[in-house]
Length: 465
Image (cartoon, rainbow, N blue to C red):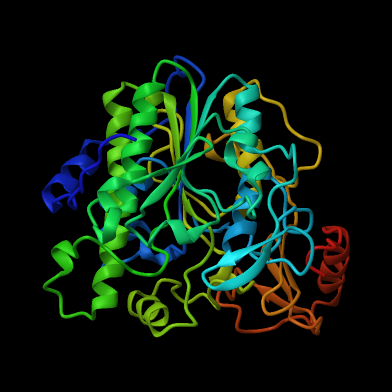
């Protein structure tokens, strides 16, 4: 492992300089010199409104904001699910929750039993041979790498990233007990679990966010001569809220939870800036598409820490619900996509898109990849490149916390079939983005279309219900 040192937060001046250095591209320009590199950066539990480009005023995110200013920002982007593992499964496989192998963090039967702290839990991992976006990109001739959080192995050694298309892996599986919070003592390099001596014996020398950033930058430098696909999966700002320093937030009249949460996001933003700078230094800026998103909405309950920070920073804005909910606050995510010279600077899209769309989009951007027949996602590259919209379709979700319930979106309409299979609720998101008024009574035909969707968009899984 590369010797790592703690990276201090970028100063406000340095961040502003980096943000200003990003070129402003007004119109689509020349074709790339080669097939584009693709970098997907995903945060964990980051709310839409935690970012300055979506209106956050208390937390500084100049590097992500700069990507938005020079690319496209989506106002109606969604995760694949309202919790971690299934949402990441949707991102990797292009399948919605009705067809996904992994539909919850924990299963009722099947899978493998392992330890979550002192508790025994049952998890499902990706199926043997299951195709992912990394598989597709490797087949298209890309060098593929994952840095950070995987969370799709379900304790199964055969479901690790290197068995599902990633040629390089540096990070962590499901076994959180080895990470020691944000100062991990072990991590995987390929299929080998190794030590991080800088954090041994209780030392807190190297910070997980910085470890991921450094490794991602190393991957870019090492593979700059070939087209590459990199997934950079940060654990921040998932609780516990821990940072090496609260930096410029130390003197704010805030609680410690709030200072730490803000600093975690600023460390993450600094990491994004370092990745962009590494791409630029390699001369690859116009040959690299960068996506920035989150796995699902921000977390509230069950601890005072989580509720306090989400409310203080208004992480979900006026949206209803949080992580684990199928209302907008649980599944809406930020999505920013930058490709200088190809995506119009400062563009904004209201197209509903979600994690299953990434695999077909990446394949389309690569130009010579192949799609898999069981995907639910759509290629959104025409919207990104200003070549048209996305065909009308149903976006579908289901979850199992506290028990089975469903949701779907079609255009302006959103339907939720609540826990316990109660009456379907219908919301007009154009008029009511906070999902306050149920308009199902006056729109029976639309409700009936969602009834069909809830039946046709899924196949039952014996592992969950």
